[in-house]
Length: 142
Image (cartoon, rainbow, N blue to C red; front, side, top):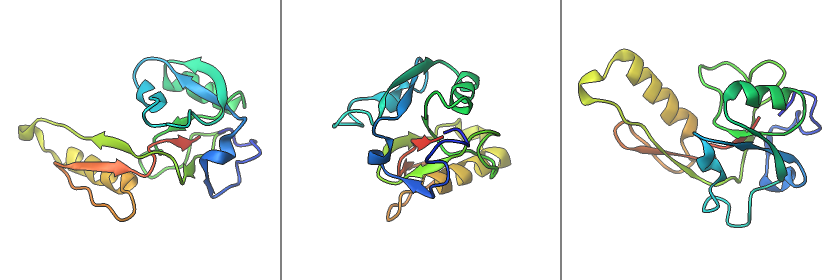
């Protein structure tokens, strides 16, 4: 969400906090976060602008036109400038699969897998490289 949003200072959010908020819609890759099977009670919020890439998403969020459900920022840095990333505590679990050619297990791939498993580990569950890791909600506001 935009850094000036009314919820921007929260440590975590709940799905109910997003009621009435315009929710960014994804077109194309990544649209699985909109899957009705993930949201049996319907997506939180109200329909917002539709985007098809990350730059459009950031522009819409920075301008305060919508909040976005997205994976947490990678690389240990914070959210992109002008936005905040806040954990959605009670969002749906989104299955995450990492796949790579067995013969291409490089230090970079191992580092990426470690980061991903750590970032998406659900409390009380384990995930290991070569298996699956589930996110407490790969969806994040922001």
